[in-house]
Structures are given as structure tokens and as C-alpha cells.
Length: 312
Image (cartoon, rainbow, N blue to C red; front, side):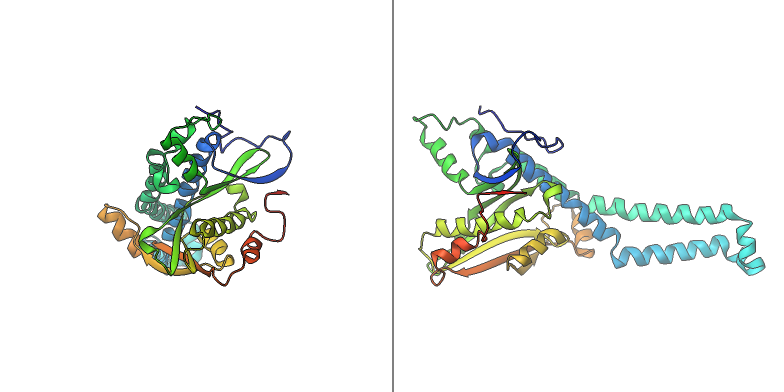
């Protein structure tokens, strides 16, 4: 098995390493780090979904009405008899109302956690089967010695597929990645479709601009896979409706919301809850007319700065 680069997302970066950001295709020594980045990114997307449910107008309205009714039952009589002064003299009843409000609020957060548990389960499922996110078996990739000149056919195919994943490293530590895969059922002579199937970034670098660079790479790599066969390039990505940060990046990269689907879950209660509170899976995409797009224009997508190496 290839010696793996640091894959612990909780550890700090190597301060002795040069403060340089560079990009690399997925190699055997980056397999564990790639897996951790993708799983962690998926898990983190649950938190905004929980917050969206707990702060949804339905939740807020229910809390306000319930607390108002309960507060009236507990304190209404005191207010009618002696006004606020009498309520101040019965703070224990006021505390009961506060406890009720806190408990009800916590209930909606707990309910949101239950409804969105499928999001975490889908993220954890990547570790069991990495093919949907990377197009290959990362465990098998990690076992390959790229210096071996007598690799079997399967190993060569895995290494070729690994070129569809790009990883950002800072101070020699993997911090972000993007992975694409061709979508054959949407591709024809007029258009070539790919999907960003894997995405991940350390939370601290979420707003650094690295995701933009990786998505630019995804566009360029998609065009390379197209190899001039189709006139139009279509790049798609699935994103949760509650993932505001990722959607902001996509908007910046000229992606548009195409359609909305339900979050896939067999739990009928979770399905009902997600639909009720508007948590869905959105499909975003961008189309490029590559026949009229010059090679220089495609390369400019990598930005005017040096894309391969730059200091943070």
C-alpha cells in the first residue's frame, strides 16, 4: 500500500512546509485524504439543513404560538390581578415558561436532526463505496504502486480514472478536491455532459476561493474528456437547497439552478419532514459552447493568476 499523505482533518498543517498551494491529480498516496475530505464535506452539509428546519416559518410560528398559549396559562391570571409587578413576584412561573420555550426549540432542532440524518448517512456511504463519488475504488487505488512498470490492465484503468479528480494541497497537506464523471445518458453528438460527483474542502478554507479554482478545473477537464466530439459542454452538480455557501460559489461560476428533486430516502417520516420544510436536492449546471470557445479562452478559466502554484 502506498504511504498516505496526512489525512487527519483535525490536525494542523505542517508549519515547516512551504506556504504554497498547488494542485495534483488523485494519486495512490492521496487516497485516504480524498476520502476524508469528501465524507467530511458531506457530513457538514447536514448542519445548515438542521438550521433551516429549526428556523423555518412553520417552526418559528409553532414555537411562538405554543409559548404564547403556555405563557398565558401560567402567567395570565397573575397579570390580570396585579400586572407585571405580581408576575415579578412569581418568577418561578416565568422560569417554567422559559424552560418550556427552550425545550420546544430544542425539539425542533432534534426533529431537524432526525429528518436530515439521511444526509449524514449518504456521506458515510462514500466510505463503503467510493465509486459514485470518485468513479473508482479508493482502496484499490491505494494499493497500486505507480512506479511499477508492469501494472495490470485494471490498475492502469484505475489510474486513468483517477485523473478525473483534482486535489488542492497547501503546505503539502490535502485541503480540497473535486471529482468529475461523464454522464453518458445525457451525452450525444450535440453535447457532452459530465457531473461533479465528488467535492470536499476543509471548513477553514471554505471561503478561500479554492473551490472556484477546482470547479474551473472541472470545466477544463470536462472539455478534455469531450476531445472536440460535441459542440456543447454541459457540467452538472447536485447540491442541497440549504447549502448556501456552495450555491454562492456555483452562482459565481455562472452555474444555474436547473431542477429540484427530493432527497432520496426510504424513511417515509424523513421524506415527509424534508418535503414539508423545503429541504431538497437541486441540480445546477453550466453549458459552454466549446466549438466557439477558443483554447485560450478555456485556459483563461483557470484565472489570470498562476493556477498551478500560488501563495495563500
